[in-house]
Image (cartoon, rainbow, N blue to C red; front, side, top):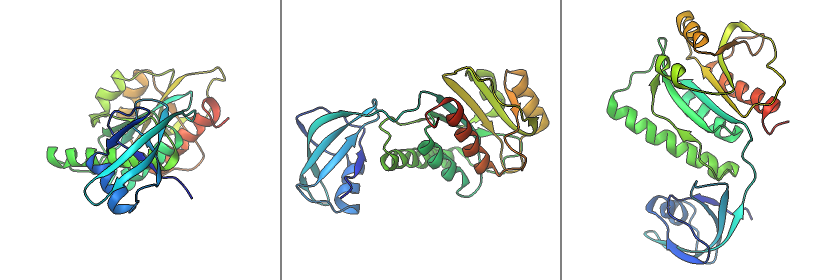
Length: 243
């Protein structure tokens, strides 16, 4: 039987007993309906490790667990990938975030661009940010990552490109350079992905002026969600842990 992995922001320590926070307790007690005696794996995002635990008490209001061994994990990529993803309509943004976490990205920044067709006020943006954070947590629980990728606040692409650093920086462009990246090893990469309508030529030129390379990643025009995950996969294949 598969042992559920549960995220909790609480301090975790071997040979201690804790009550899970309300969100984790709700998931364990109400959603999964797990009872006393069932094993869990707990992580809090503090590092590449998790803890074996056993439920001591479980009801609809409270879940108490006994924390046992601390287990190191080694499934974080040696390549730190920061994805700047233009805001997308519908569930495209959620899908990109979920799959990017599974593919091993370390940072995600939602971007306002000229062709973004998403209208969100401050209150709705705050709710979206919380929703995206929840998607990151759920994706880490599912795929076995113990380190949560960092979700940065929404930024204008013009502000983001001048402040972001990386050994390799791509701005995806269907008119860009199809040549392969240098073969030397790198430890960090940044990818800027436009919205459904694409980045404007001015936005691409601003990125290039800030040290980005306009990158063509194939002979076909990809949707924004496909482009993001294709770029991450290419980077992991060449420089990360897909080799």
